[in-house]
Length: 75
Image (cartoon, rainbow, N blue to C red; front, side):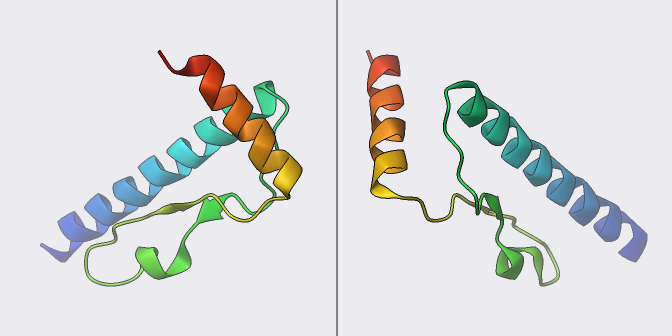
């Protein structure tokens, strides 16, 4: 049972890492870099990890650039 839970947790964390990497790639493609884009360490702990992607902090210029990109994607 513990091995199954460990495998599930490992897969959950791997999935979160892949999501973080996909977001980083997509942001980079439109010229945006969030230097602290990462997984939230606290969300990785406990019996059943529930990883969260931390977007991190950015300059006002980067925030505006991100807002501009999102506006071009909205219907």
